[in-house]
Amino acid sequence: DTGVSQNPRHKITKRGQNVTFRCDPISEHNRLYWYRQTLGQGPEFLTYFQNEAQLEKSRLLSDRFSAERPKGSFSTLEIQRTEQGDSAMYLCASSGRPSPHAGLTYEQYFGPGTRLTVT
Amino acid sequence: AQKITQTQPGMFVQEKEAVTLDCTYDTSDPSYGLFWYKQPSSGEMIFLIYQGSYDQQNATEGRYSLNFQKARKSANLVISASQLGDSAMYFCAMRGFSGGYQKVTFGIGTKLQVIP
Image 1 (tube, rainbow over the protein chains, first blue to last red):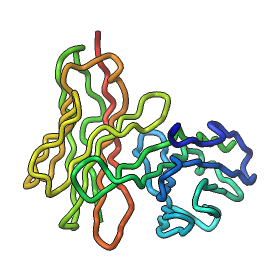
Image 2 (cartoon, each protein chain N blue to C red; image 1 turned 90 degrees about the vertical axis):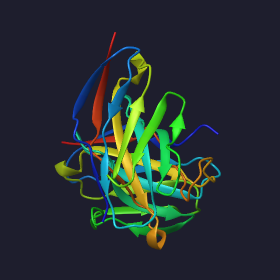
Image 3 (tube, each protein chain N blue to C red; image 1 turned 135 degrees about the vertical axis):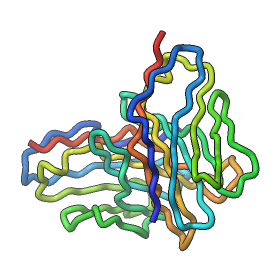
Image 4 (spheres, one colour; image 1 turned 180 degrees about the vertical axis):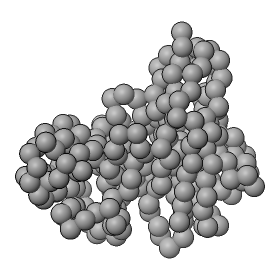
């Protein structure tokens, strides 16, 4: 178990281009989340998968954004026709093991993120 | 709707001293969880500690403890015996449990700098 991995770690693209990011969650985790983090802010929720099903989407996820998790393992986040406002850190997290803590939740384990710069 | 407020943009603490990072929250969910994450300059979010809204005792994890005051809707993080490696951004976050809601809401963070 090597944790959540994300590729690429950095991406520079020109406005109008499409980009795709990949997230590999912790292997036994069935839940996967995407967040966006801009400078000086906390992460903002984008979308959530349970296995291969996309169960929640934020209003932040415009039509240019699409996320998939085809086999319930890795996930991809694609941004079409990138804009300068898309420049941010894109974080992936996974959860699914019962929490060792008392309570009803599962803590989310984050990957290192993909930093996108749109020029 | 959920809201997390962190009012300290930056904090300094002397090495080996204790420091408290403030967090207040607002939610209409009767049941919820509160988290603290650490984000070093490398960017990765590291889970530190969790408190459930019905937990009777304040959570502790090593040098981290969560001062949970439910009536005041506060969930402050206390770091004891600060170390240089504690210098990072710290985010308070919460998750509600109504309707299978999975979204975690984060605050804007507090930048902690530990001084030698």
